[in-house]
Length: 296
Length: 94
Image (cartoon, rainbow over the protein chains, first blue to last red):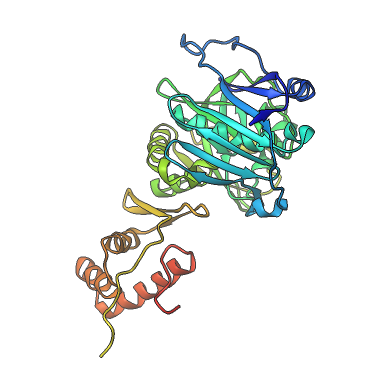
């Protein structure tokens, strides 16, 4: 595979860094202008040396460009993935890629359009999958959720499509709270529990994260349900497991890593059980916080 | 003479496990995740072990001390739902 050029760029995703090589100068410039990179994190991870970046070789090649609708599942864009013991192969709108999952995680991305390569429809959709697998390899999860900070802790809001994840995030944002994302957040093990970091994959609200290096201990995990009355209620362990699994994109398809995912889900739920939060659309953030606070 | 019953076959993409008395079923081809009750997960365990519909009915009736005719109707409905969700392979001839 030949690259688009000899330039490189780095993208920071929480504590992870993706080193894109084989870029043309124009692609590298666009990546650098859109994403935060850096060679070393300014904040060390509990004294542990930052891992080497995940190298992604970006190259040019003939890639079929089927209609985007081919990759739509329940209104979400989902690339086609073939699972192998050593890694995965994926195909999306305008790209094909691989992710090697052996000793060191690395990947390749093949596209046919120089400019489109670094647009979200290709680059972000590829990196979402890499991030999900990288998180799994580190005992963490890339979650499809919205996340906001309250009292120095991250509140994660999970739910079916249309349950109100973005609406809650919008309300938090309007109330001046820090919103980490209205689409995806990265949870990684830290000490006895898990912490939440931002990912540069934007949802409907665009980029809301203020600090991509910051991470917040999990303060609560809520499964959103639409209802007239604001109410917090417990969920059975099986429902918690099912809800969390349903919010682990890409890796929850993978039959070869189902056991690893299950173990992480169990560890996460031991520390951070999920409650059901019934709320009405547009419920003010301060009312949501009040019901969560009252339940402590 | 009626043909012998065939074992019920779960889709190869389906995985399930017990979690605190209930079952979590994952169809990785979608992916879709659902929760089934204790009897539902027991039926899945029997299917995984190669049971036929009749054997599932008999074992559930015995283990839960319920009349077989009552269990038969519930199992039939349950299997229909599982087939509808692609969790259970279609009956032969469908």
